Length: 152
Image 1 (cartoon, rainbow, N blue to C red):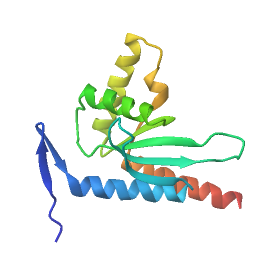
Image 2: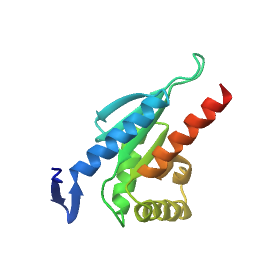
Image 3: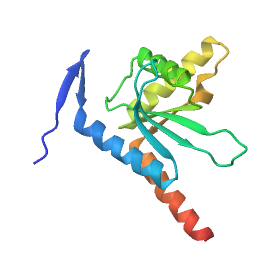
Image 4: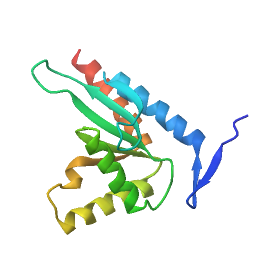
């Protein structure tokens, strides 16, 4: 019988079972798309859950995506967004992807990113940060697989 492991950190309940299953789904998607997956990367800036990388052409640079899995639901603290953006930039990643459990969390992050961009600055976060639910991620893989089969 599954018993969720729940920890309370800073007033937020984290279900580690949910985070582990989301991580496994993300890894499956990445490997299906041909990405190399590295786990718990920390080059001194802080921990990144997964880094996906792939070099599509020998004369082009390797693309690296920082994938941060957030198992918390609902409103996300702006500090979580900015600290993860800084971690991924300092780890030399080309893009940051937040994978979240539900639409409410996705909208919370997207709204805060838009408000950061409204303030101004040299980095437009909406071009650097993508937020996707785990169900959208897996559904997108199924669609990509079907379109690849249709072309073959």
